[in-house]
Amino acid sequence: MKQNTQHSPAWITFTYVSFAASAFMVGIGIWFLPADFSVKGYLMMGFLMLVQSCITMTKTMRDVHESDRLVNRLEDAKAERLLMEVSKAA
Image (cartoon, rainbow, N blue to C red; front, side, top):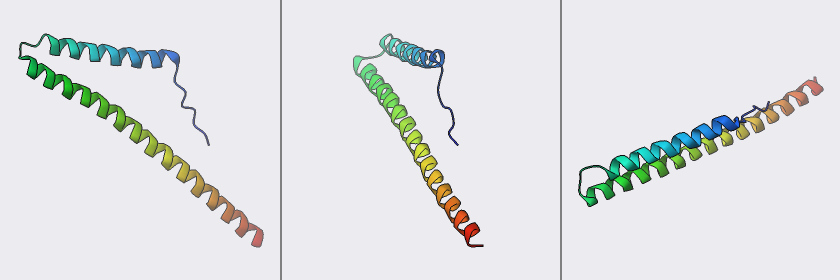
């Protein structure tokens, strides 16, 4: 049973625009923060690492989910084959 996971172009555009807007606003907030350059640099590095780790975590979670779906399909196929063999023998 295959699930339809296609997203609409509007949703894809919305997610990209939301990400860009939030990254821009945080960048501007850090830029205008009344602090030393070293503090701003530290905050910007932390922000970039947070974005990178969120992307990596999301991809890993999706990969684990896809892998689990494949394993479940293989197990279902094995069980179906076993049931067919049992029903033929009876």
